[in-house]
Image 1 (cartoon, rainbow over the protein chains, first blue to last red):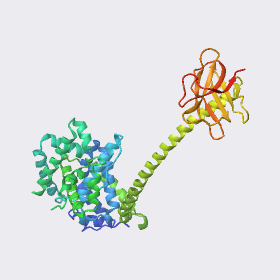
Image 2: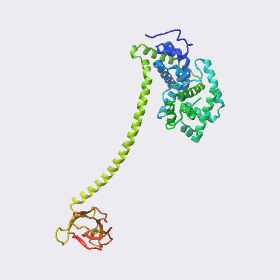
Image 3: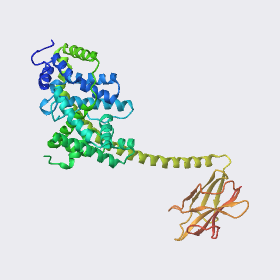
Length: 187
Length: 256
C-alpha cells in the first residue's frame, strides 16, 4: 500500500526528510523533490545532449533511480542536489559520446559535497551568481576549455585537438580555471 | 587543510573528468585510500556541480512528472519483497565488491594476455620452422619419388668395408647424396661432393662430414638449375672446400 504523509512531504520539507519519506515509499516526497530539482536536471541534460526527448529520458532515469535507491542514500555524506547534478551531467555525456560511437569510461555517480544548499530558489540563485561571477572573470580561453570539458566531457587531449593548442597549455588553462573556481568558493 | 597538496589540482581534474585513463590511475588510487583527499574530491565535485547552474533553465515536459509518478506508483504497489528500491540497501556494496573483483580479474587477464602473447610468439616461431622443414621434406620426397630422378652409386676400389655413396639427382628438383663407410679425415680436411657436368668444369655440391660410422650426406645443395650431369664425385679437400677439385677422389659415379 502506498504511504503518504502530508506533513513530512510538503514542498518545503528539507531534502533529507523527503529522501527518508521516499525510502518509505512516499510518492508525495518523490513529487516534491521532482518539483524542486527537475528543471535543473532537465536543463543540464538538455544543454549537453541538445534534444528534449533524450533529456527527458535522463531526467526520468535519474529520479527513478533516486526513488529506487532512496534507502541507501546517505545524506550525511553528500548532497542530494549535488548528486542529481553530477548524475545529470555524467549520463548526458555518456549519451552524447555513445551517440558518437565512443567508448565510455565514466565512473558511476559518487558522493558530492555542495558548498551550499540548493533546496530553495533563493539558494540556487545565490550559488548561480557566485558561479557566474567566476566565469565572467575567467579569460575566455580558460572558460572555453572549462566548458568543453564540462558540457562535452572532453579530455585534455581532445580539447587540445579541437583548439589546436598544445596539450600542456590546455592542462594549465584548466588547472588555473579550476583554481579560480575553488578560491571563489572558499571566500 | 589537505595533507596531500600535491593531489589538490589532480582532484579537481579528476572531478572534471578530463584525465586520460592512464593519468587518472594514480590520483584515483590515492583517493581510494585517503579519506581526507576523498572528502576533497567530493568538494571538487560539488564546485563543478554548481557550474551546471549557468545553463538556461528549461522546464521539462509537463507529462514527464506524471510518467515518473505512475512508474513509482506501479512499483510501490508491488509486494514488499519485490520492490526494487529495497535493492538499494545492498546494491552499492555489491557493485563495489563487483568492481574489486573486476579489477582483480582485469589484472589477471592482462597477465594471462601477456603470457598468451608470448606463447603465441613461440608457437609462431615453431610453426615457421616446421613449415620450412616441411617444405624441405616435401622437396626431398619429390626428388626421391620422381620417375626421372637419376640414381647413382659411387664406390671405391678399396677393400671392405667399402665406402660408397648414393646420389639422387634431378636437373630441376635438385640433389640428394648419402655416403657410407667413409673413413674419418684428419683435422683441416673435409669431403667435398662434385657434380661433373656433361660440359664444363666440376661444380661443387658442398662439403660434408661423416659420423663415427662413416656416414655423411648432402641434401638439396644450391646448384645451378638444369645442369646435365655426367658424373658425381667425392674428393678430400681442405676444410671449407675449394672451387675446383684438388684432392684425391674417394668416390666417383657416372650417370648411366
